[in-house]
Image 1: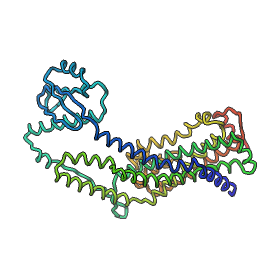
Image 2 (image 1 turned 135 degrees about the vertical axis):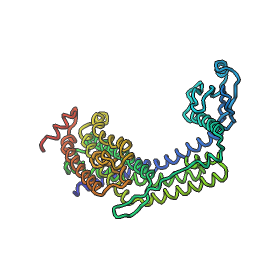
Image 3 (image 1 turned 30 degrees about the horizontal axis):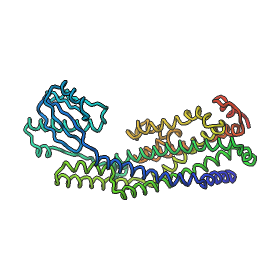
Image 4 (image 1 turned 60 degrees about the vertical axis):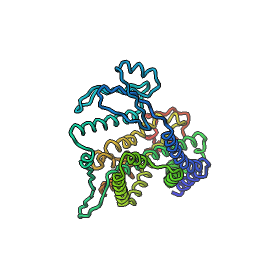
Length: 442
């Protein structure tokens, strides 16, 4: 065990003391807030300086009166559609909007002609303008005024309460649980993949540089593999922790410094422009109440347990897949040779990734979600996606036990391949060769 510890220490210090590690660890958290700040700033300035798009309108229904805005300048045309098309082609205007006579109960046949494919946002804005006008026409037909319509609007928000077996009540929120599961699952997937490939690259480098021949003269190949896996895991966990802290702090600081607002805030301001003072006051009060409720619901989650589970599955998933990546690295002599083995290794992890969206976030307590969260090869992604929704202790314990067993199993398999492959050079490696090395007696 002492030799494993020395190898762990060597792997950890070799990577942490490199300039590349320091640059990456510090630079990445700086890049993300900088990119966010620059892009949002450019987007804001572009929106302020953007010229209104000109839209020519042929309204054969006679039911529309368009008002110009910052986004659109409407030019009504009193001519047949075919003639309007020719006139439009001779201009640099954004679009030609055609509105035929239509039935209010079933408005159909409206078309937009453009020289280039318009963005979904611009088409959506024009559709909203048309929908609002048709809605107003229907109100006039049914003799309903705007104030009556406002009084008919009802917003229902179900307050979610979890009721335990003992009768204890605890508030909950599906949105928080969804995004928590989404974020944690993606992080596990990315870092297991990234640092697993780092292990493979490290093993390949030592094998091709012949350093490994000196090392294995004093330690067993299995000890070397285990020490390398755990050492790189320590580097990954340290780097990950630093990134989370710095990115969170710096992103908040950058947005505050430039006076930029988050997209939700900008959306609220856009909505507020079309509302009167009383509506704005009510909307802001509702938004503040919802934010407070979300904040309280988040801190009612078992954050300590969630953090522990995340770290456990981060390390467990990394160790499980790291052993397999190390085995492949010991067998090949370049990253190009390793490509034929990478996809089969990462396929279960990919299944867990897709299962996160298709099953776990939709129904965290379903049977498929259960199996994905207990099978060792998919549980690192699946279980952290479920944990916020409240996983029974027996399921969590079973999943953890199977993950530990899975790590030991893959380490045993990888160790048998590693002990032979690490000293083999010039061999054309295939799945058949790997099986042969696995079955070879010591």
